[in-house]
Image 1: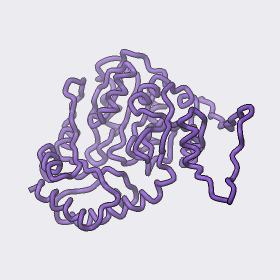
Image 2 (image 1 turned 135 degrees about the vertical axis):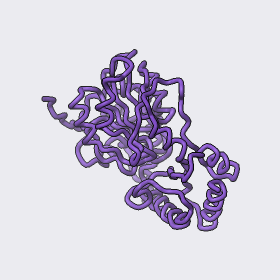
Image 3 (image 1 turned 90 degrees about the vertical axis):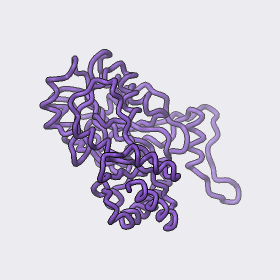
Image 4 (image 1 turned 180 degrees about the vertical axis):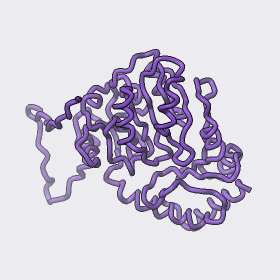
Amino acid sequence: MRSKPVAAPISVPEASGAARLSAPVGGAPIDFDAVARALGASGYASDLDPRLAARFARPVAARAFADRVETTAAALRALGVRPGGVCVVSALADPETLAGVARAGLKAWLVDVDPFSAMFDTSHLRARLPEAPGPLEAIVPAAAHGRAPDMRAWAAFRDETGLPILVDAAGAFDVMIEAPVPVLVGLPGGQGVFVACEDAIPVNAIDAAPFAGDDGLSAWPGLRQRLCGVAQQLRVLLLDSGVGFQPGWGMSWISPTCALSLPTDDAGAVAWKLQAAGVPASCAVRDRTLASDETPIADHLAASTVVVTLDPDLDVESLDRLCDALRAAVG
């Protein structure tokens, strides 16, 4: 049985002769976020990792890194994968996920998803693993547009199969509070990612450039509130439009990306029309050169889902224009 990791306190030795921070004359408050960013940019430790770890329901190790692709590859290597093997990836995985798998020296094998969650279903995956086109080295489940995956189910699946699992939840900062297996999450500031896990060993073994800059943690509560407000208005304005939303989006959870389910399979044309109207929209782009299982559900979801990047500061007039553009694009 694997022994449980023991969290050890982190101490930063004080440099010889270093000046201590003190309140400036006159009692003006210190901008500690600015100090942390400056220290991080200079290569000194900040309190970002402990603040990230504190978000989780159970004790975890957490580390922040600069680049998503590099971190994906480094995390897979830290899990002990062997180059040349097969990595099972969601057929709806982002290009950055696929690039990280390739950089780790693995061959991506795309497998179909569940029609309701747009994520891996472990029962389906269990039946498909024997058909893998080579020796299996890892599984990379992907959170669908910020929606939370079932982390405990993935921990059970790892224990059942013995395969390393890295959950890609780059857009799911709002909902990721469990990490029984390693999970990669984007920082709310829009740059950088972090990896968290209840087992500190693979997290500490990641060899990637550390994050430096504005992590966005202090601004997240206000940003979350504004995003939820805009999302709820959008839901009301599109009640009779024929498009659907992910369950709970804007109510029990939020992400800056809004995945809209269309009544037709012409997501590419709708995304193009929205872009022409000034709305930042995209749809899934499938890499047909990669090895793939039969993926009818993922094919349908890719063809019928448009993703709109949500501006948290949209007013009612701007939301009306967005909805008018969407209605016109859907036809």
